[in-house]
Length: 509
Image (cartoon, rainbow, N blue to C red; front, side, top):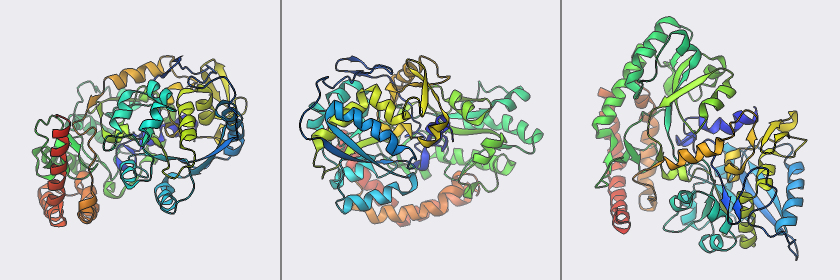
């Protein structure tokens, strides 16, 4: 997989494994970065927050656990990284990578057993940030940020640090990247052009119907709407727990938690999806389909929905090898999960917390270190086209890191073909973000763990068939709601409402 494609792979999984994204985490690019000594830009070889005087004393070795498939050239790159960090902060870094599918489970075991570590990746969708912060797995970082992490505070968008607080405190450093989460309808442009289809008036899923009919009638080998089992219609809700049936309305004033299965919005949305399913616009196997990558590779799809970021159409087009265009399906909202999509925490049992924060500060403010961690060694994994643009070399396949997981992406080099204003576009995107009503509210589920588990089991039974139109919502919506209530949904909503009311009062909402 090419580096550019790998960097966008999470975005293509429709809000990742937790539908956030693709977000989340998704995606991987980000904004601009300024430090306490001025603007930090790719190609500037000075660490913005580190003295030029070589540190003295015994070198410190930091252990960093992070997410992603282990890379063949990791040791080779880290040898160069450690020469640099030794010079800058008198520390070396031992990076241990754990693949995406194994990360949460393995980290839970290692943290519970007291495995020595200093820095560890956490987020809203892997090794849950809020839950583990409350369990005491992470060090509270407030004082460290004021001292060893001042460059971070001066550099990244303040909304990341504010939005990722747990009970009023920071326990991890968010990656400076795209801040809002926005959904778009994507289209295979070759089919749009072939049938002269206009997407300017496509605002909702229902607006897709005449376009889908054209493709269905004329392209029997094409799936009109490429959909997977974790699909969920865009609705005007901010969810207490992602993809669980309790939420507040986006325009809420009273912060009343509603059961979305009882709202007119869900009934209307499911009616539309069911109509599409019956018309053959969606695969009949959608309720069990986990991937449609084969459709993307073959160009045998017309439309789908995905999380976006600035210049996303360019990335999709480069990844698929044919033109892809998109149009908004939602507003750019800033959610808890979009803020917490990629973070680095300091372990509560770290023996070197100050030095760990020094390293995170350097990683997020120094373009030399950040780009070495991201792209590897110049002349081996990439070559420079200009001061701030690189081109991958064949050995890049041996060092293909998930960019989003490594901190501030807005001091990254541009990739060949990127526009010069890429990071300015990210900043504009972030500035346009709209705070979701629950931003800053973190639901404590400790009192209703049994009910959460029971509701999750019901969700496994009903969610995919309902949301993908595979069953008749007039019949199955009521059945699902009955089972959700029997599993304890009302008790969860009541607990959420109690906590939300207290949060609302404390924050003058």
